[in-house]
Image (tube, rainbow, N blue to C red):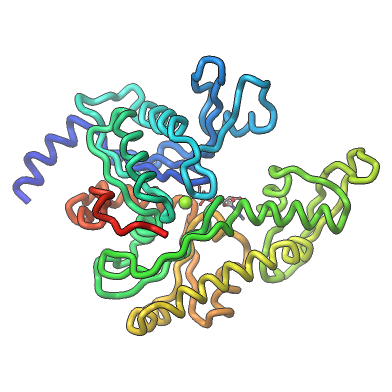
Length: 355
Ligand code: ADP
Ligand code: MG
């Protein structure tokens, strides 16, 4: 403790502590002492002629599908894996600069980066190198389900089992945690983007019109549910009529969206069931008693917690503000680094190879 108030305090005066949730859909940046300062879509627009980054985040997302030939808007994390290392590095560099804007300290920041749980050791090293190259003094890597659990204040160090289901954009993570480690994990590509695709296919088949991804996502947010609510909901959507080729508007209902999502939701529930089935009995008993915790933007689909609870017969808690659980977790880690050092990935070579 004496050391904490001496060296540690000095270090904090000389450099920032920053947490990054490198999500497939959204990237959040937490700055110690300030909270979440950046919350942007994980999209980067790059000028292919000069290699320069033109825009990052919301501005770049607006450009998706609308760029001239020489500008490309890329999502650096596709399906939870890093599809483009250089762009990822550019994005991290931009975020670190913005997070420290007008307040640069003497040394590079100490950075905790949350990465999707499915990523390989090679990718973990790439994230570490990218973060270092972007100016970080020290880099700690944490798998996102663990960070989400910490953000939700679950007792991850105790000999008590917890289950976290983080439903993001590209992937969902199902993780069972106990005593600072992940006892079981499953990473699947059924998450928010898939739900959008389901809606696009359903509308194409049922109404014979083609809608874009943004429209599908908007409808999902507005009226998406997996259990009927008290009142029916409707949304009007515009698309291209598949037969005439002309624009047409139709009204879709919450029942349509439930129908559209049903296959993916069933697959998600089955995956949760599989993980539960392979969980050691003592830990399973803990989870049955304490419940399953949902995080990630997908947790916001109306009725999802209730549906999962009835399917697996275990209570389900949807954390308040599920979109920020991982970023808040990186913040908790930064506040008490010594307490969490054991669960951070310091050397990816020490990890068992991932499937
Ligand atoms: P990631 O961690 O992969 O970046 P997020 O946790 O940020 O993902 O979640 C993004 C996903 O959550 C997107 O697919 C988005 O459509 C979805 N989402 C956000 N808000 C809602 C909502 N209210 N209802 C349904 N889905 C939502
Ligand atoms: Mg996430």
